[in-house]
Length: 344
Ligand SMILES: *Cc1c(COP(=O)(O)O)cnc(C)c1O
Image (cartoon, rainbow, N blue to C red; front, side, top):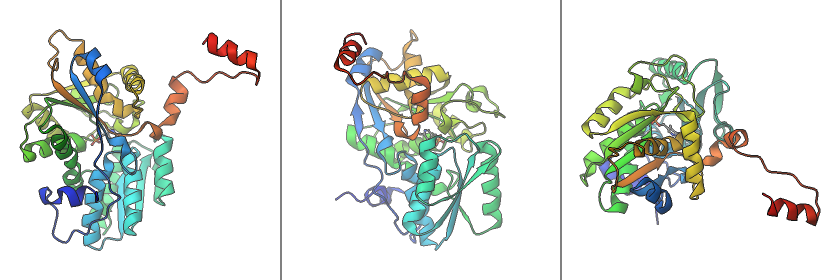
C-alpha cells in the first residue's frame, strides 16, 4: 500500500530523526503523456499533474515534511503567508496533526477554491491589506519573536519534501527528462526540483522557469512592487528563493522567461483540449514551452520534456467564467435543442 512521500522517499530527505510522519498520502502523482500537444510542439511531452494531490497542488509534498518535523518537536501552531495553495495545504496538514493553523493571504487576491479549502480545513484565515510579499514579511517576523512555526517554503523541510516530485519523475521515466518546464513564483519549487534531480543522479534536465509578465522579478532583475497577473499562485514580486532559482537555471543550462496572461490562458485552454484542466499558474510552464517552440533554434525539438502542472483547475473556477464562453440557455423544447445542436 502507498503511504505517502515520506514513507517512500524519506531516506533521501534531510529530516531530523524526531520527525513524526503526518501524511494525507500525497505524491505518487501521474506523469501523463500528451501525444497530441507533443506532436504539435515537436517533442515527447509529459505533464506531471500535481493537481491530484490531496489539497489539489504540489504544496502537499513540502507540507507533509514541514508539518511532520513540527509535530516531532511538539509544535502547536503553524503560520504561513500564501497566494492560496500553501494556505489550503498548511490548513489540511495542521488539521491532520491537530495543530492550530494561521494563514495570511493578500486581500481579495486569492482564488475562491483555495480560500474555501483553507476555511474548510479550519484554518484561521487573515486577509492582509497588501501583497503576498508584505504578508510573508509579517509571518517571518512573528515566527522570529514567538514559538509559532513558519511553514512557507523558507522552511527547509518544505524544500526537502518537494524534491520527491523529481524522484518520482526519474522513477517513472527511468531517467531525468531532457527539459523540465515549470512556473516560478516564490521559487521554492524550482529550487526543490533542481536539488532533487542532482541528488537522485539519474541525469539532470535543463530547466525552463516561467514567470508571468506582470510578476517577473527574476526575469527583469529587480523586485516588483505591485505584481499583477491572473495567475494568482505566482503573483509574487520578491521571491524568497530567487537567488537559488537563478543559480539552478544557470547550472542546468536552462532558461527563464516571462509570458503574458493571454499566453497563460491560451496554454490553459490547450491543456484542457487534451483533457487536463489546470489552474492558470499551472499552465505557465506550458505557455513557456509554447513560446520557445516558436523560435527557430527551439532547443526542445525531439526531446523528452516534462511540464509541471502545479495545481488543479478546480482551484480557480472564476477564471473560466470570466475568460471562457458561458453556456447558452434554451427553452425546454425539442426544437430549440435541435436548433442549438445543429447550429452551435
Ligand atoms: C505555489 C505555486 C506555484 C509557485 O511555486 P513556487 O515554489 O512559489 O515558485 C505555482 N503554481 C501553483 C499552483 C502554486 O500553488
